[in-house]
Image 1 (cartoon, rainbow, N blue to C red):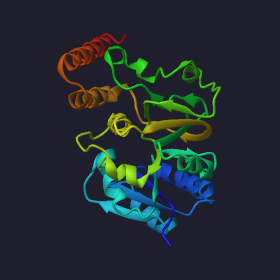
Image 2 (image 1 turned 60 degrees about the vertical axis):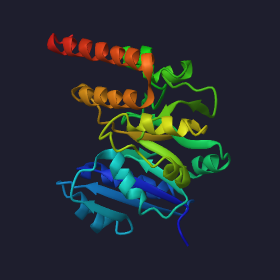
Image 3 (image 1 turned 45 degrees about the vertical axis):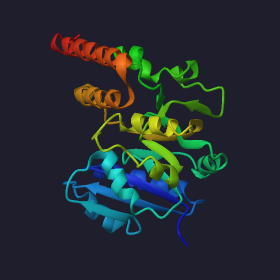
Image 4 (image 1 turned 180 degrees about the vertical axis):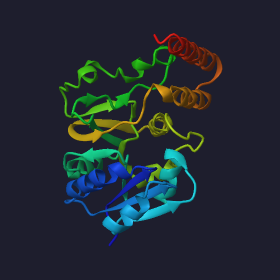
Length: 269
């Protein structure tokens, strides 16, 4: 019998995170028929040997090149046997049972993808959902995360929220939807592919749902030195999802944003 849920993990030199991540998954997936698939993007830190030795039940795909995040998931999903998918980062620890999250997804065919609450290593709240790109948030990127007042401090008054996009660090969905949108757009290598992914789910008329009562820790790898990758990702997004005057205006807002950031870096502001 095939598993109900296939868990996909893209790994690149993530050895130090793998034990905590996999142990948490096996614990929080106890009530679900599941499989774990890891695609390794040509790691050099012994990740593959560690997985083979300690987690022989994991379906390991050893790539000879670094596919990046989006293409890595697209390759991994080819091996998935479940009707449902969980895409989760390697630098995560799941804190709550995933059975209620899966049941919520199954309860409504209009749900395209589900995400849960993200915490840092100190278990402080981190924003994990956002608003699709527009002129304001391309000019000032922190506005991408201003979904509502509840999301500012992580004090939630509801058990579920419909949002524009969810972080790619945790995405649960039907495999049929993943297939219908052809997975991640491989023009993105790292960053913004999750925003694009959710936009194409939105274009199908499906909901993107955030559930705040279920949690995971994410060690989070983004820092200011990677800002150019973020800007590049949004340039690709704008080229794909905007047309005419709006495309010109949003592109200009992003250019100004990027220029200001470079000036601040030069003068350490």
